[in-house]
Length: 485
Image (cartoon, rainbow, N blue to C red; front, side, top):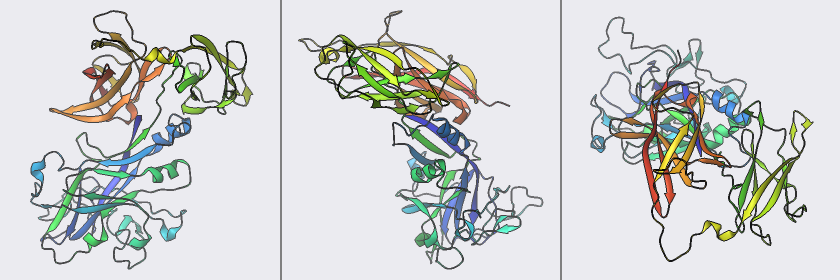
């Protein structure tokens, strides 16, 4: 399972019935209630847009492929400013605002004008920072009432409905007409945002939803409309202008795992074989998925294994699943013939490969003694230790897994995983959770795309599972991602 991050291209917190702009504020403050402050009063709403260009590029190139997998997820993630310590619970913020608890936030789509998809409500982020102009300072550059704000989306254009929608279902655009994508409950108030945008983003990628101009997050109308409050209740999240590592993002997870059985194809098990297609050293997509026929040792097609369908696992990699083979002699050589191979409407010759079929029991170790725990050593190529990498690179990181304290005893079939993280003091901030290494007939590897990573120092851990043990090898690789000026 790989991860692609898409970051916000603009964001703003609009404040009820006011012209305040906070587009450049590093903190998103959502609140409800009536506090004793000049401005804001009532409630606030957060709007944002996502740069989906790189995600769309990977989707169109087939790097993110739906061919072999339908479990692609798009999760909106925003880090709560109060999530770092439970001591913050049931207290005030640093500027003496009450922390909200027991509430729901909703994720919704910014609507079209008159429900017409050719009339999107385009909007500007703005240059404001402060929420209000209490004790104003002459020429205060941190306060702005320029668009976007509660009323205006651009200088000469207003929102169809002030605040984008009316929570009392009175006005031009009502809450009941909103497209609600997800609802999340916050019991303690310090939870991070994890909104599921899978269906929404899929519809953008496949073209069924056109001209998106952004989305919004707000409290449920029942909270926004509460009366009789003597205080305002706040929750905060890091915005796209944060100076921390916790920039909000859309996290796309997709299954591009290659688990090639060619070197350990066993009878009685489901096995997978792959075809790797290149052009001048770069992965190449075929015009259509090829077909696979399995030939026995006598040169005859095996019944039920003729013209098997394949799927595209990722760009230039095609997968076929072979059901458990029965009635085949072990230790024999079978042939897999890949046909229907076309590139730019040009038909290429069949590709013929071979594999050895091992007995079912070859993967088991049965006896009167237990196996000794194994210790592993690793070599890498693709990223150097302590290397500084530009955030424009895509690196293929090869992993050579060896028995420790040996120089060349490679282990060809190991259950191995990697994870990526950064460090903030003694805290490890996860970038990618444990993910299985790709396994081909000649290597283990993973792909690391720096283009969707925030510049920082990164660490890679490796994990190997064997003999009932899970052995984790900490900080096996350390490197930095740096900006290109």
